[in-house]
Length: 309
Ligand SMILES: [Zn+2]
Image 1: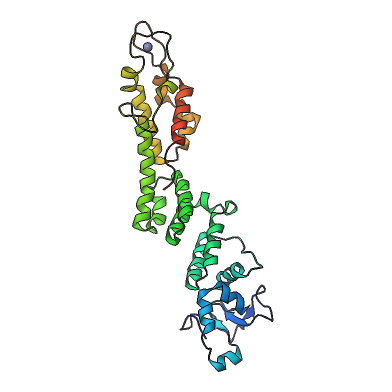
Image 2: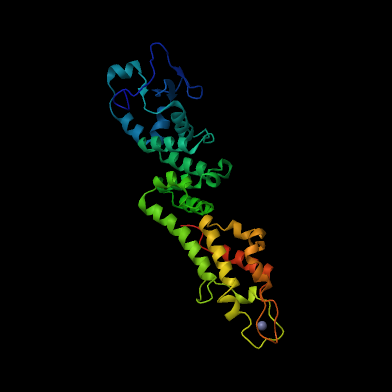
């Protein structure tokens, strides 16, 4: 019997006799499989019946009597690593090993879908998302694509947050983005744009927004001032506009905003005039902006921005 129909095997069994997978060779296991790379697996029928809708259905069909007597191996299309992973998941007394790559996770997921192994799909999701595996922090776009494809809603949200370290328009991202369907792609681009827009809006003195800059947090208040101490001269023109432009540039490159959080952002030369800026009122003439407080306010606003789809 063959699961694949036509033989998809790439192994010449006559010159290269197959051997049993060391973890799946129990004599009391009653079903024998042979993987695409020629490895034999002895598997307990009841485990397959519980673990796989596909094999449960197959076991219920009457097997060809001659084939049943000879207990001929059932040929499967998957390689031995993928099949062993699936079995490690569905056997109740085993634990699946770590995933070697997201490509491998994808292969296992495709097989799990074909064999209707829901537990395997869930287990792979947990492995992909586990901290130890580091996929989420190192390949968030790929995790987002996988999560989108298999409908892992929470995982897609977590992955979307991690993608904020990238500029989605950079060529490095295009291969991963091509794998997304239109809706999930739009949602991801939407998050990146929303975050940037929300921060610029928060720093816009002309509009009231939530989150929005608290002017009292950034201004050094004078003891006396006969004019509108900071607003007209400093915020509507001049230094504040330069600050907003620099913020906009950083948010394009990295919407997470880590560059803005660094001291080097606020220390840059382009902002020197801001820290020297004094009030125009004759009775005041004091410094308007506090560097430390402006930086703290930027960080406070960054923490309030939308951070997941
Ligand atoms: Zn003043």
